[in-house]
Image 1 (cartoon, helix red, strand yellow):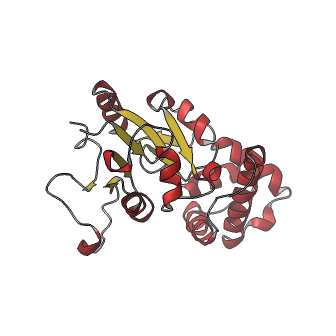
Image 2 (cartoon, one colour; image 1 turned 45 degrees about the vertical axis):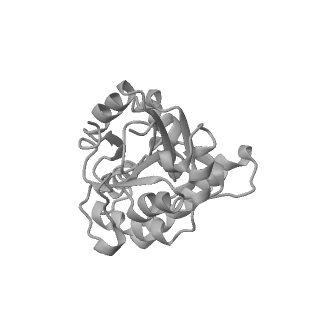
Length: 239
């Protein structure tokens, strides 16, 4: 039994209620900007995947929150532009400030039903838990608001490290916070590339939490006789 488990955050522990497009559209509607949530959601993901990684290597810690804000401002603005409604905003920065703050609360998020039972079970077994995520600094208040912060002894995020999963540096930074070697640590996350492949490359025991039942080539996902490398729920792992 491992003594330390790293977990991803969004998509693993919690996720957006409905979709990002729905939340964006609901808040925009309050100020008179109307857009179909499905169109805005597709536009958001187009903008998000085309953006550069949210990492700020070599930047002093005090400047990171503003850089995170600016990064998301650009991504969200591009989403509304792609959706063809950006011109409807009279003051987009003001709207975005409210949108950004909204995602630092519990309101737009839900915790997956398998999460709390798994975290409780692992804690009872004396397993140390930590978060390794490409989220921004809002992760700290979100974990607290969702009553998850109490489970974790450390939180490591890409913007503070200057490297994002699947880069090995973020896993190394997380390991340095604990007296444990990589081969004795599990990392569990919902992204095949960022979490599974990234953790494996960094020398950790990786488990792909494939909540969406995505398909990948079998050659890319070797299974061993000694551990499970793919699951669709944390229920199976928390035994």
